[in-house]
Image (cartoon, rainbow, N blue to C red):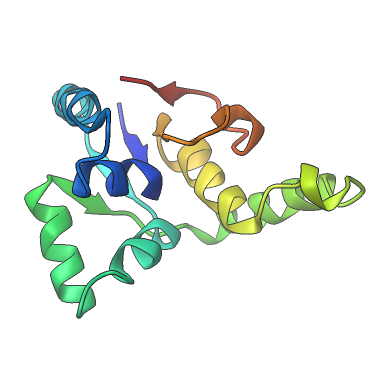
Length: 132
């Protein structure tokens, strides 16, 4: 089972915010079930906190997390889904970056590990979520 990881989980663990230990254990268990991956959007957000993308990649490798780029078909599906919500007020829409992350989890992984302040289903329309 492939687990895609959202930036919110990476930040929570890296900053050792409340609940980080539960997430670390959940990801260790998930890693026993299959690969842990991040898409290019998540990597871009994560790498912005490092001096170089090489250091960001090294840190992910140390966490046993692999880089998995978004495929063209996945990006196209994310855009179609995003257009489905074009009629909604701005506050009800998800940012396109979230659509890409969700599409990556939906079509290139089996589940998404996401820690948000709101119900992740309101931001991500993925089929399965990992909760610690």
